[in-house]
Length: 398
Image (cartoon, rainbow, N blue to C red; front, side):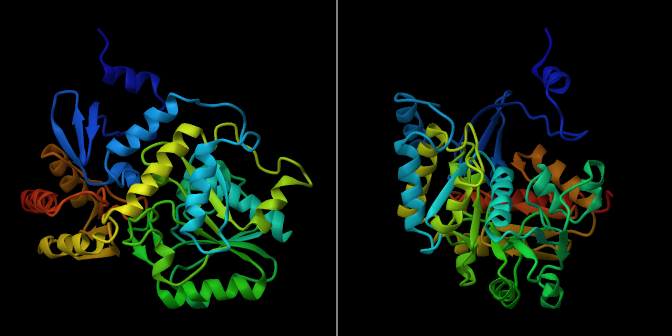
């Protein structure tokens, strides 16, 4: 009988030559349970998705309740569906006043694509500015915002008139001018290794956008929904986006994203041409029901307020001669090692000992630590022991 692993390798399109290839039987809380019964701590939250852990009981209950009513009914924007309007109203209530109109999509890449179109349509301009070493997705427009040609050269030509500033370098913002439709920026650069924005730099980006009439698109796809220690990372900086992109943890484990702006901006997608942006499954009622309950739990619990103290616990415990530094904010921590070879050895050792950990696209010598917000102090102490043991075990091996 052919194994699931063989089917996975033969019939599923692969994204790399070396997938983890763990066969997952079940997931609950911070744990993934493999087909052989072994439990793994998901210390990367499925790459920033499971902020409430896997299968949170209240999110699961909301999904079951909505499944009993209706699933897909019509393409986006035609029918009035309670899960969509409840979530849109709820998210508007916790965002700045200008972010009062939500366009639901299925993923972060889709949110970025919609935001780029909205910026071009509203401003009538075509120039885009992104940051070097940023990651916003791998669809065509999102890929155009990646500065590293390794990831983009094979898919050219990409979007024209796309330029790159240096993150945290105010002088490089001179490329933002009156021909710029939008500046796309993360508050914490994710795939660069969890690098927080400098407050003066991000304020300068916001100011430059206002001076030139460019729209500031803030990508909170990784950093949103409490991971930074606030519901959204832009709250740390006192900045108000023109367009906000969310996904990953937004759906509580279900595929849900959104780009959010003012009614004035969003209205331009409804005419000249009509259907300026459209999706079949965006805002799926089951996903919106999950997203709503996910947001309710985050707002009514102390999970977000506890992030800072738990983050400090990681930093306090992860002390080792081979750790060069720990960057990041909240539960977005990048642990700097001396080489990617050492990192891969540490990752393998951690996985063998029941802790799923990973690295970054642009920082293969940094461990990614982004656990579910529900992780306890006792659980943090256990995983830190595993990481430190992996560092000890891999000394002088690479």
